[in-house]
Length: 299
Ligand SMILES: Nc1nc2c(ncn2[C@@H]2O[C@H](COP(=O)(O)OP(=O)(O)OP(=O)(O)O)[C@@H](O)[C@H]2O)c(=O)[nH]1
Ligand SMILES: [Mg+2]
Image 1 (cartoon, protein in one colour):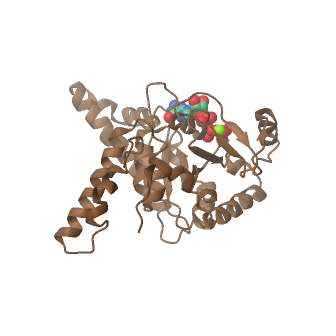
Image 2: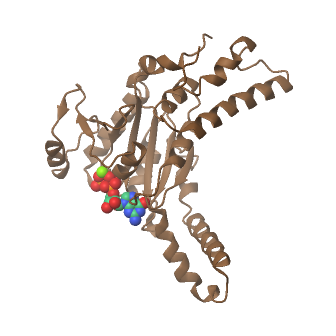
C-alpha cells in the first residue's frame, strides 16, 4: 500500500464529519464549541453548500422542522463538519425517521468525504435516574450505524457529585479532605454503574452500539476542555487515513500525536515479535511514525 501523505490528507478525505445526537439541553452545542476552541456560533450551510441565516435555522427548529442535513462549521476550526440531531426526542416521529434515513445514507456513502466519520451520542447525567429514555432506546435499537464508530458522551457529569455527597454526608465526618474526595469519587462511579446505562447501550440486540464512552463535566465552564473526547474518538477510528484526518483537526495536540505514533511503534514491535506480517514495511516505517505529526513537514 502506498504511504499516506499527511500533508495531503485533507485533499483526499476532505473534512472530518461528525453527527452529534442527544436530547435537547444535553450540552451538544457546548461540546462542539469546546472541540473547536470557540464560543462563537457556527456557520450553517444547507446540503447544497449554500450558507443559511442562523435566525432562519433557529426559526425552523422552534417550529419542529429541523434539517439534519444542514452542515455546521466553526470558523475557528474548519476541519470539522458537524450535523446536529437537535434534541430529536422533542420532534415528531417523522424527524426520527429523517435521522435514521440520514444515518443509513451517510454511513454508506461511496465518497469518503461525504460519509459520516463518527457519531457522538450525548446523554446528560443531570437526571441520572432517567439516563436511558425512549430516545436512546429508539436510536440504539433502530439506527443502523454500520462501521461508523459511535461514542457515548455522558455530559454534565458533575451533577452526580452532590447526589453522592448527599448520600455519604454522615460517613464523611472526621475524614481528611483527600479521603472525602476519594469516597465521593467512588460513590459517583457507583451511581454511574447503577444506572446500567452503559450495559443498555451495549445490548447485543441493539443495531447501534457505542465503541467507547467519555464522561464530561463542567463543559459550561471556561477552564474545561474536551481532550478526553478527542482522544477517545481518535482511537475509535480503525481506519488509519481517517484517524489522520481527525488528527489534522488538532493543530496543537502534540500529546495525541505522540500517542498515535507510539501505537504504530507498538504494533510494529508486536508483529515483529510474533513473526506476523509487519503492519508497515521497513522502508516506510519511519514515515508511518512521522505521519502522525501532520503539522511537521514530513519528507
Ligand atoms: N452544569 C453543566 N452545564 C452544562 C454543561 N454543558 C453544557 N451545559 C449547559 O447546558 C445548557 C445547554 O447546553 P447546549 O450546549 O446548548 O445544549 P444542546 O444539547 O445543544 O441543546 P439543544 O440545542 O437545545 O438541543 C447550556 O446552558 C450550557 O451552558 C456541563 O457539562 N455542565
Ligand atoms: Mg444546541
